[in-house]
Amino acid sequence: MITEDAVVYPDVVKLLIKDSLMYDFPIVSAYMNFDCKHPYMNITTKNLMGLIPFSAYQYGLMSKDEIFNWSKDFPFLRVFYQGWTCQVIQRWVVEKIPFRGVRECKPREDIEIFGYPKPRPCFHDLAWCQDLYKNNIPNIVDLRALCYHFGNTVRSIRARGKVRYVKLSKNGGEWETIREDEPYTKIYNLPSTQVDRIIGKPMDREEFIKKFWGVKT
Image (cartoon, rainbow, N blue to C red; front, side, top):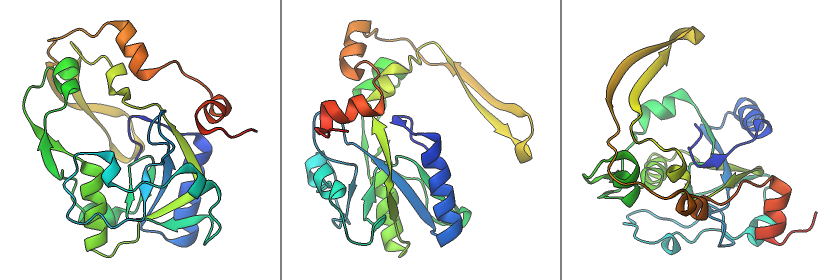
């Protein structure tokens, strides 16, 4: 599973599949920077059971320096939380652990981008990790599998006016559209300059590391 706001490299996917096959991890994940302003990654070993989140500072996220200098049990780290960067999950885990939210919220982009004004479940990644913990399923991160997070990139998809659909490929065959719904409603228009300000211009891995992490390569 790859989340929509992660830049995941093909070698990372291959590495995680290899980890899963070699070590039989129920779930093994990559990780990424929290955003382009803070020196945190989207993983933590802090126990977050019962957390009702309102701020990322509650998570106790690990810093880049902690991870870059990590020497214990490298490259695998058992975490409590990982923020859905890219993960290889065994089928029995998906069947056992539900995809649910911790609480309901009403994100601004739901209205601006999708025209959806109703509250919806959110913090699915935290709920997922809490359920893994309750079921004693190890949540493993491969510290070699570092990916790139642009931030709130949902604003770049420009979904307004596009038809919603679900496609299914049976046994690796042709993709078949099994459902189509009405287009996303166009309610607000975000100026392109605002979108560019939020997302920023694309940059490669080395440029990102030099600019935001202060690491010379």
